[in-house]
Image (cartoon, chains in turn green, blue):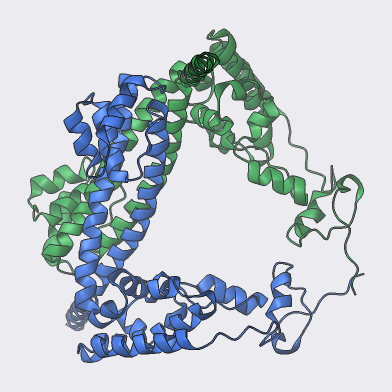
Length: 308
Length: 308
């Protein structure tokens, strides 16, 4: 009988563990994180494939260069299927394209004649690019709507993609919402941060937040300050997203814009080379291994070994 | 009248230049190189996307792990469309799959419930993977047939993909066919080679040829020798491919197999640590910058700066 009691207990424990796992995954944030990572990876592959197709198409029709991946893929598929009438070409190029130019070049091209076998494989490669483009569109749409549900304040303050990327870097909404502003500011700059800690190179000023238009377009000297201002407000917005679920982003955005205005209006003081930690000299030394001399606040480094 | 003569001459020159370019691109080798590069890049993207889908699907059905990208993509599309009947699942899994296991897990899963919006985006991502798989199949087929036309001897001796990769690394069949065997042996190992030349690390033994089953499966000590034997025969095969266009690969293959047999039968002599160039010590020093002392045959290195 003791055996059966044990068996029952085991069943119950298993059930409760399963329920725990199930509950942990009910939040949509995990799906959003997968979507963000899929978006980042797919867009990288997409650009690579576009460049390859562009080069490949250059063998057959070197006179034409098309900058839009979808237009290029459609045009290549048309060419491979022998659809060189004005309507098909014009449809492939979309608005702003110049179908007459393409058509006149097709007849007089100095490129290679396309064999049937090649045509099939190039068309297949082009349709893979179209499929990637469709998938990217869907991912973007989903990320936008999910970020609006999960991170309404943060998305309003920054941008859907940036909010979602921050989430994906942090690993969970709870972790992200309890991070200090300084950590949020540097999410995505881990490599530079550890290089700074280990080798004494200049500390990073921003990670993912670099993608904010306000940071990108700012003057070099105040980029870090603007990233810092954003990080503090994002930190508040995240707490609203995770704990209270109130929408407070409009007020935050107003405050933020005022801070940025103040930062931009303040005159820029020239940087002293030796301020805070002697980074100038350290930077020149960072890849010479661990041989740095002890100097003041960098006392954790190993001493130079004297061998000569 | 002099103006018109000049104009005519210009026209002629342009025409002849165009004809020259056109002629240069008539060889199919350029299309083959594009296909090889597309294959390498696409298969990298494909594996990445498969891993992402595998992780994403794990949110909804963590009990099931599927190792085949196509089966996984088909299964995910079925799940997203609500097709959970035995026939659809069994078709998606293909031969060797266990549809009953999947079906029983679907009903009792501890994973997350899939919302409609998520289902659409996951299905889109999965169909992107299917499209990539189709494209890869076509690329493989084309590479096989084109390598057989352009590099019949080399393909016979090694493998279509390896022959095509060698071609793509070299940049043209002419360049590849006039390369010495030592260069062919190291194609694809440029990074290791230059590390050897600059910092005195161990020299590489093979580049692309490492993918040959004979090299991969050989004992560690004779891998380099077998790669060398292959390289010498490939060098001859390439000359037949480019110049004489005869098919001589059968005889070469026989000779090659004899050489490999001889290499394998020879007893392996243990390596002396200090033989030829003092690599042991150099290896420990390779990342300390350019501070190495002059030692014998490595005299091109800069002397250590004495600062202490």
